[in-house]
Length: 89
Image (cartoon, rainbow, N blue to C red):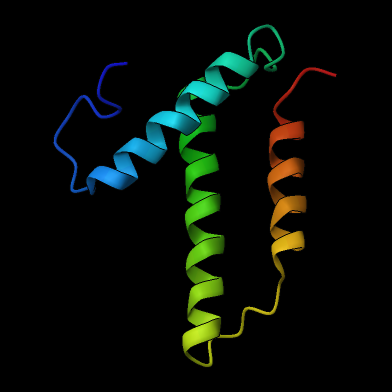
């Protein structure tokens, strides 16, 4: 599989590896199921931004007084809702 980034990006090797796995899953699983008005790159980056934001806020809530009281189950609901909204019915 080619490198997940075609331009210089400050990202660690584990992050790039994880991103490559997510990219493969999104492309492989969405064949013919992705709504035609959803650009795949926008979906990829939107999904990554959602994951990063939820994980960051949960970490901050555990280590500081950051007000993020949602659970891992709540995060799974958000992921599912996000992806379902981008698929054909």
